[in-house]
Amino acid sequence: MLLPLTQAMGNKDILKDMKKKRGYLLEGHVLLSKSDPKVLEAYDSFYSRVMLNRSSLDQKTKELIVISILSARGLFEPVSIHVKKAMEAGAKYKEIVEALEIVGLYAGSPSMLYGLKALGPAD
Image (cartoon, rainbow, N blue to C red; front, side):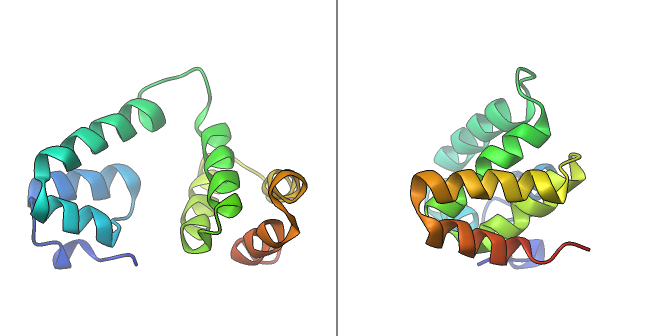
């Protein structure tokens, strides 16, 4: 479940920074900020290193990989978040569809179909 930043009552600075970098917060981020903020900081550092601070893969490719993994795992709510991020990074609708078709080949057609549902129709 996505939470607005105003509901985040844990370590507000790290949560604010995470929201700014990612564009969203998950309920688990907020819960971890309350239960073990040092682990949340380490997790955020890992996320930043992998998703934001390296340049071997461009952001569009990274987001297509994330969409594929989330779809294969059946985590369709976050797929919508990363579809938006992929498009902001320059991904075309057809590129996302193709990534989801690969998911269908290797993870099964339900994963592909639910991923396509999260993607929605072409504009």
